[in-house]
Amino acid sequence: MTPPYQRSDERRRMVDQQIEARGLRDPFVLAAMRDVPRHLFVPQPYDRDAYADAPLPIGNGQTISQPYIVALMTVLIRPASTDTVLEIGAGSGYQAAILSELVRKVITIERIEEVAALARANLAAVRADNVEIVLGDGTLGYPPGAPYNGIIITAATPEIPGPLKEQLAEGGRLVAPVGDRILQELVALERHGNRFTEEHHGGVRFVPLIGRHGWED
Image (cartoon, rainbow, N blue to C red; front, side, top):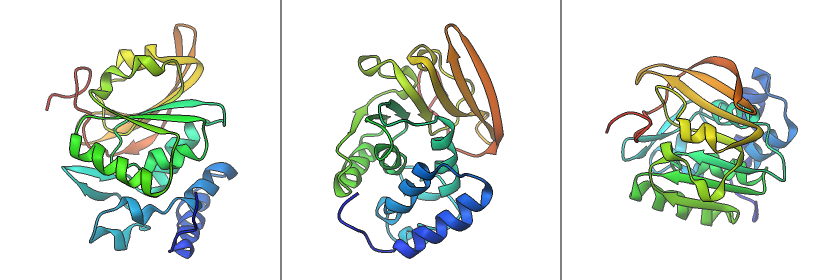
């Protein structure tokens, strides 16, 4: 990310105290978390708390996830520089900005036009030129860009949508909060042909995933 941004000391503390101290050690993910100016992705007046260990509202009933969860979901898809990654739920663009530093291309799908516009402006401000924003139903995925080496679902889903599993590349990984509208389990899948191995990574709370293969609006 260029040019350098303000509040770099806060970003370093965020990574040291909230992420690395909890056991996440991927040096590339940690570097991206130190680099991307999180406060630019949080609207006023909440931007003053952008580096706190908590989710924050971004408008339209949506939130930006706490820094540790963003880092954990990123680590779990095992990003590589040649990857194409699909994100479901652009939000303010922060997760996509982190991914943009780690992979070749990011496609992020957002169903709310105002939120997509916010993400687009924020990503342009930090020059994340390898991110494409698509307006639509994220539970259907985005077949034109498939297959994806990684898929991150940033909203709570009752189950992993079938179209997203189908669009995952061989050996690709998908991470999603799976459960009800109140509490979910963070689940990571890895594809091996028509078989998917599954890992569980603790309880989380996300806004609901709305769409044909998610929750009704």
